[in-house]
Length: 93
Image 1 (tube, rainbow, N blue to C red):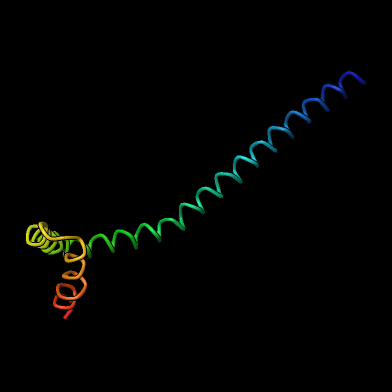
Image 2 (image 1 turned 180 degrees about the vertical axis):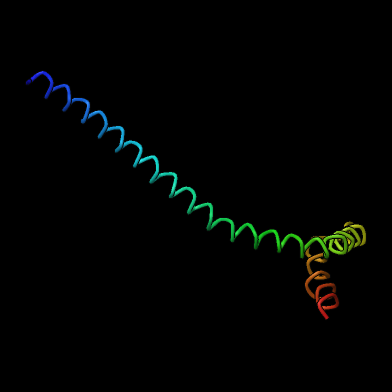
């Protein structure tokens, strides 16, 4: 009888340990899924921002290449002055 009891308790202990490991794994999986769900909102916002910037990227590239080709031979101080005091105010107006 004692041997059967010890065998049953050993089986119970093994089942309990497996249940604890499974519960821990489920907890980790739930934390991962919840973390990814909150990332979905950020990803959606990022995609919307990228789609919006797709509309202006060709113009931005054109302006930058025009600026670099036009003022590339001038000093850095003169280029910064041109950008800050002349080009940006004209482009934002």
